Each structure stands twice: as structure tokens, then as C-alpha cells.
Amino acid sequence: MNNQNLFAALRAAFPSDLDAVAVETAEPDGSGLRYSWRDLDRATAMMANLLASLDLPEGSRIAVQVEKSVEAMVLYLATLRAGYVFLPLNTAYQSAEIEYFIGNAEPAVVVCSPKNFGWVSKIAFTAGTKHVFTLGEDRGGSLLERAAHCSDQHTPAVKAADDLAAILYTSGTTGRSKGAMLTHGNMLSNAMMLKDYWGWRKGDVLIHALPIFHVHGLFVAIHGALINGSKMIWLARFDPKLVVQKMPEATVFMGVPTLYVRLLAEPGLTKAAAQHMRLFIAGSAPLLIETFNEWKQRTGHTILERYGMSETVMLTSNPYQADARHGGQDERRGGTVGFPLPGVSLRVQDDDGHVVPNGEIGGIQVKGPNVFKGYWRMPEKTAEEFTADGYFKTGDVGKIDQRGYVVIVGRSKDLIISGGYNVYPAEIEGYINDMPGVAESALVGVPHPDFGEVGVAVVIAKPGAVLGTEAILTELKSKLANFKIPKRCFVVTELPRNTMGKVQKNLLREQYKGLFA
Ligand code: MLC
Ligand code: AMP
Image (cartoon, rainbow, N blue to C red; front, side, top):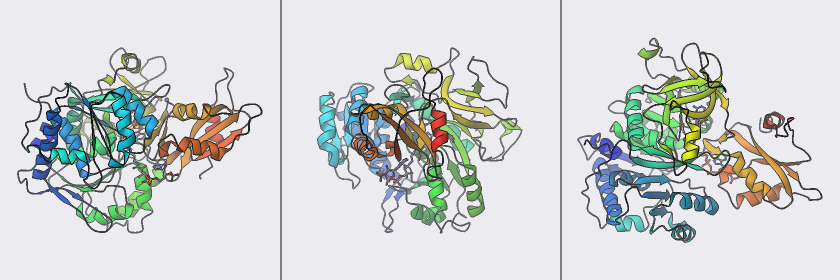
């Protein structure tokens, strides 16, 4: 059998000159480290050998909550290489959140920051995890110490296209987060297709400035560069000044809309600064047309907006060059997410399950080699999210316009996307409702100039109880990842309801929409 291991395909794309620079870190003080392709090959082999030496069961999950570093990327690649399943976790998650993910995924190995070892290892060992390693952003920790003793030769594990490569926790509109199971085939097919669709070419250099615990930074960006044998300029955290400074050495940049908004606030962002760049790609949240237009005016570049999900990797994209499937149209149109990618079937259905004509709005459904295998240990949830004929219901609402471009107009799922991170109102409301004196709460998303959208909590007190909004926010901060904390909180006497008694969140959104204008 031909090995379908994603790592094997990425490794095969390494340039023949293994001593060339594969990753160069960029620091605000001008310092930086260089990793050659040979370094990546050897480091992933050593780490894969370390994992192999643990004698883990087939399909073991490797859960990772560490600061962004090149070594953290090496750990991801080594997990693929060794044939295990990577489970990335946002560094902002606190103990209750981590406890849920580890309890649900039952990873065989957990890797955490040295500073968190105490509480993370306690959660992991309690959940039955046998191995807990540490990895610091400064290359410290037990993982690298142990890997240093392992051989730098390793043959990638043989994997079928349908074998699991990663689990990404996502959504949870009603209950807890669900682990989306992505296979080697899902990701490899998507990466190969994007290489072609976005015109990756020899000499491309990617500025990598996104976190590496979500689809965008971990898969789209890293796979994109590696499958093209392209160098990455690696920023441990997004720094707009540094990104602008690095543009003359790079050709491709990927960001969520907030990154573009912050870059536009940088006086150094000019046509001259962006002259060497070939392509700016945006996604993960709606890009405002104002940002799209301002970017064009300031840099001379037209942002290419695309659309994807944890469950599907990339689904649609504006064209990079003429798309023969759509009459040779090559326009990147702001306010749209472009065409379904080659191999992806996308349709729009009404609530009765009928496909609507182009121009009409409905639920977006997709099918293709990129669509995930299902939710981890949740067969019923998986079944609910697929149609009888095998389309995945994205929960996004939109239309296909007369020219074939997909336009997203909203979401049927109750979800707030803030700076590219997903916030599930039901989760936050649950925490608020559990506080003493709270009768009920509603979290709604309102427009925000920096994060696109942010959460606002509206709370009702129990009769006789006195609630302090600051106390509510402080309590939430002690339990939840910082990006989930509502930016404002209001205590009111009643919530707007429809005749069925359901809270009308649309009216609350309308009421508070001007808060951050
Ligand atoms: C940070 N904060 C946020 C926030 N990020 N608040 C709301 N939404 C966010 N996204 C708050 C913190 O709580 C903190 O508040 C304050 O901002 C400063 O925190 P920070 O960590 O210093 O923030 P900063 O580094 O400035 O981070 C902002 C950011 C980051 C935009 C760089 O959010 C980011 O990297 N976003 C990218 C997310 C991403 O990669 N998404 C891809 C998903 S994949 P306080 O009050 O504590 O000070 C996907 C599929 C697809 O969706 O299609 O790609
Ligand atoms: P996640 O679950 O984090 O992968 O987030 C996926 C969701 O992000 C999608 O279902 C969309 O709602 C949203 N999304 C991704 N890209 C775009 C985009 N370009 N425009 C609007 N929404 C987007």
C-alpha cells in the first residue's frame, strides 16, 4: 500500500538542498534562529522515535497545550510521522476547560508548558494519561531533553488516507465541545489542492504569525508552506510592526481579519513595504468590506478571502488566477468567500431540505475529500450534522450569487467569532447562570472595531438579589479562557422574548450593537 501519511507527503516536498533555511524565527529585537530542512527532518525523527519508544496503543492521542514555537510545530509533525493523533489546545484554556478536553479525549501523552506542569499533570494523571512532558517557548522542558537521546532516523508510520491525524475541539452550541476527527487524507487532499489553487511557486516565503492550535495557523499555513518546500518566517506572536518589517523578505501572508485591521493601523504599511508580497489571504471570520477596500488602497494588493472550518479545513476561496470552472473569472471580490474549491461540492438548502436557486439564502452544506470523519465518540451528533446523502451541515447561512461566488450572510449556530476565536454563548451563559443570585443570562455578539465581534452579557438577577457586573466578569475570568470573557456585562430586569418564551437574541444584538462603534 502506498503510504498516505501526511508527514510523508510533506517530507517528500522538502527541497533537495536540505541545508537551505526552512524556518527563520523573527523577534522584535532583530534576533532570530534558523532551522534548515535537515534540522526539521532530524528533529521530527527524534521526537517521533521518542513517541514510538513509549509503546503507545494504535490511534493514541497526543494532547498539546504549549506556547507557539518551532519545536511545537516539530511536535505536531513528529506526531504525524509516528502515526499518532495530534490534539492541539488553545494556550488560553484554564483548568476546567483542559479537564474536559483531556477527560473526553483520553490522550496517552500530554505535553504542556513547564509553568503549567503542576495543574495540567494532575488533570492528566487523574484521567489516566501515562506520559506528561513539558515544552517551553525557550526550548526548555522534558520533551526535548528526552528526544535528544533518540535516533535521528525514522521511517514514517504507514497510514491510510482514512486514518486519524488530528482532533480539533470545536462548537458545542448546546452541550460541550465536540472533537472533529480529521484524517491524513482530509488534510493532504486540501493542502495539495490549495498549493495549486493559490499558485504556490518556487521562492515563496510565508510569514507565519497565527497561533498553531487551530486550522488556520496549524494546517492551512504550515501545510501550505511545507508542501511547497517554502521557507517560513516565524513569529511567536502577532506583532504588526514586525510583520510589516518582514514583508520585503516574504511573499505570502495569512491572517484573520483582526490581523489585517491591526496591520492597517501600522503607519509603515505602504505600497513600497508590500511590494515584494505576492498574496494576502484572509479567513476564519468575516472580512469587512471596509478592511478589504482600505487594504487595496494602502498596499495595492487585493486580499484573497477564503472560508473554512475545523470540520472541513478549507471549503471555498476567491480565485488567485482565472478559474476555468467559472468562465475564467479571476476577480477577488470583497464580501464574498469565492468559489467552492476544486473537489468540494457546496449547496444551499432551505429548512425543508430543498436546494434553493442561486441568489437565495439558506444553510450551507458541503461534501468532499476534505470533510471530517465525524465527532470523537459522538456518533449521534455526527449523524445529526450530516444529511442523508452525505452532506455536512456547516451551520453557516449564505447564498451562491449569480456569478457563482459564495456569500456568507450569517450563522444558524449560536456562535460568536471574536478575533478569529469561537465563543459559544451557551457555555458562558452556563457559567453565569450557576452564579449565586443569577436567574438567567444571554450572551450576544456585537460589532467591534478590532475583534470584529465581541460578546456582551445581559443578566437577570433572582428576586431580591443584587448583582455586580464587575463581580460577574471577575468570576468568569477565574474560570475561562480570556478571549471568552464578555467585553461588557449588563444587569437588566427582563429579556425580550417571543411568544414561545424564547429569548430574542436578535433584539439584544440590535440594542447593544452601537456599544463599541
Ligand atoms: C485576545 N483577546 C481577545 C481575543 N484575543 N478578546 C476577544 N477575542 C479575541 N480573539 C483579549 C484578551 O482576553 C486580553 O484581554 C486582551 O485581548 C489581550 O490579550 P492578548 O493575548 O495579548 O491578545 P493579542 O495577542 O492581542 O491577541 C489578539 C489576536 C489573537 C487577534 C492576535 O486573538 C489571535 O491570534 N487570533 C487568531 C485566532 C485564529 O488563529 N483563529 C483561526 C481559527 S481557524 P484582557 O482583558 O485579559 O486584557 C478557523 C477556520 C478557518 O476559524 O476558516 O480558518
Ligand atoms: P472553526 O469552528 O473555528 O473552524 O470556525 C469555523 C467558522 O468560522 C465557520 O463555520 C464560519 O462561521 C467562520 N468562517 C471561517 N471563514 C470565514 C469567512 N471567510 N467569512 C465568514 N466566516 C468565516
